[in-house]
Image (cartoon, rainbow, N blue to C red; front, side, top):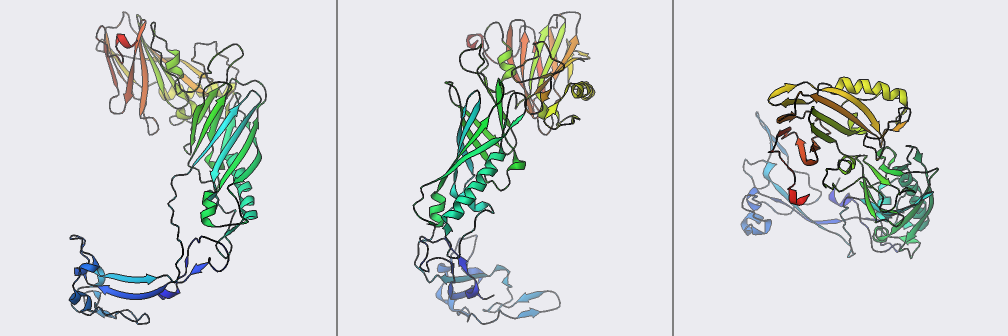
Length: 469
């Protein structure tokens, strides 16, 4: 293909009148530059070459002339450069000057990471979600094609926007407190900043599309959960969906849904509880006496948490793990992907016991102590395990957690301990623990770099001073 045969399609500033469509460039000059004219180590540019360098065998060649013939010898194949010599074409720079026969505005854009933003107003019976996306996102789908003049018809843009709205509706998954998926209804899709029936690329990228999706809630819900389902994303471009969630008169909560499939839980105020509803993020109070509930419920659906209770009769370790992280160690067999019934929970307890019984080692007063799993309980959102368990309840695999409790017995109150944490894998590289000694407590982080907790009575490692409590 000759250089003049290559069409270039550029976005134009206006539609019609021959201003759009392919543009055929015209090559005005073609030069073969020797290595001396472009030295990467010295930063020399072609303009730095002397006139002799440029003229010595570097006269512009006719565009129809064939490339220099191949010179063959017994050892290798090389190409004779036009200035002679034994240097091959490997270090030769070809400089072509191309002139476009058009003085038109040319727009060049770099697409950043796409983030869909919106709001979600949560009420007892419904959720009204408003989403806003850029018109440029439609170009990354198969719903819309440009006309021959490079422009886009408004009717085609509207049709593509409606199809894209259906994808967003499926992409955002809303579940109620029973774990059931609430299907949303696309109520409307409105195009903003539209003033013409024919849209150029520049106009399209400035276009904003506003969607309104309504989710109808059934029954009473103490919480709802949000998730981005990448399997339903289809051609959607969004790498993240950021929602400003408003629950009644409570402060707005920011919820970020990524393609990693994270689940975000929003608590709804109960009828017998006033004030700000609890969310999946809490501030650890750290008051006297030590409160463990805020710590256990903090980031409950994303992180692994542990309570290390140093007691008079030994040590008790309680692990709180989201179900999704549990399956990175031990897949749980079940009939439905989203739920775990009572019989499946009983079978899962035995699988967890076999997988975790040999995890973690503890030295108490410089002596190894064998631990025993004494309890495995599945927990719902907002539960810590101190409640009366309901063995017949079905749990959602997206929002439930499992509590595993070990006991390390001792005949006397321990004076020191060294707990080696081994519950790490590719998905879990750290675990936060709250160490409780009597009425006091301090936080400790386990990680693959520092998997040990070393404690000595009256010289315990503490995460905060007495003045901070």
